[in-house]
Image 1: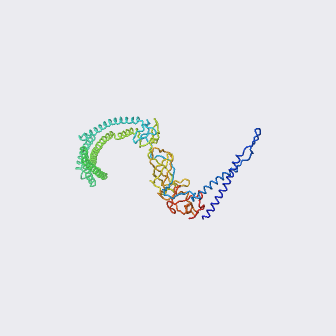
Image 2 (image 1 turned 90 degrees about the horizontal axis):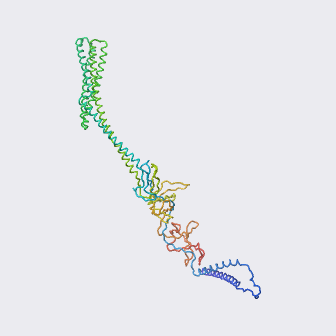
Length: 568
């Protein structure tokens, strides 16, 4: 091996000597041309001009090649003599390898709130702030015209006052009407009851007269009556007694009901007594209806029996029956009068309640409170801490439910929307750390995923998931700035690494490096390695080398001891 190297060295030195000799000849020729003297023929002789000759362009070009070759040969000679490698050398060292998924986006605020008016249909008066002003939650930022609302309040208060006065009068009138009517009932001076009572007296007198006439006729003709008529007559008499008894009972029950209601003071006991009396009156009324039915049936039977036996006795009896009917009807009318009086008394009581309800100002009170609240709402306050970024109205504009007065933005917390491809989404979730780099500021901020879509968006056959990244901003950050967002894929600490350019690949896909080999460590030796993560500048070495190993970059220079790569 040493003999071969010596021969190569001799050849190189011989070539260098040859080149040096050629260079020396060229230099000497140039010097000689410059030193040739001009011919002198005396004072009157014409000057002798040097012979013109063509410039040696080709020789100048060759000259520089020769110079470069000599310099190269000299350097090469000393490299060979020193035994050093001219390949750049790298050392296997430990460093951190971090890989990212990188995305771009634009900064926008996380919290931005439109200030909507609580009162619509009123004129805008003025703003107490300008765009760009900082505000705190609750600060006054604008004022609305209160005049139209105040006019409504004044009108409503006037209406409520007039309504209260009118209502008080109505209540007093209703109370008086009720009291007067009730006193007439209690004192027995109610005209309806008095008329019904007089009708009973008249009917009863007629009944007594008819009864006497009939009795006299009976004494004269009793033996001449048939058993059928006698039976029908007896049935009528019995039914009559039943109706009369029922009428008296009903009259008593209705009278007791009226007295109970008059004594009622509204307590539970009084209400129970009224209910009991009402039940008795209703039961008496049903008994009266049943008695009347029996009586009418008896009369119908009698009328059928007397058709062929008309005589003086039957005529007297007809008169008696008519008198009985008139009397019973008078009793019925009396009971009806009692019911009517009771209903009228109840109606007057309801009138009192209605008049009292008319004076109730609850609805107007609620409306007044709402109007006064609207007055407070005319002072528009900031809904949150932040900066007034938009003022939407000017003096004289009318507020609407759809239009905002202003916009307040918080720049403390900002966000960036990014699109994460379907092959990069694995492992990304809410809370995943994200590095935000703002190129315009040359600053980096720590953020995290705050929201991530569960449904992919497909654009030209590519699926991605929309995500929001939030981060705490400083005063330098502005909405609309472009950023680069990085999500860490791998973060390996202090692993063995080499520059990416030193990792070479075989045809079968395996990787290797040219390790520094040979006796003096200057020979590229092909060494198989296994690689891991790469950040684009450095690649992790997982096996094949150890820390401190030297690797040669064979893409530059040649070795002083061996130009070929030795397979280790």
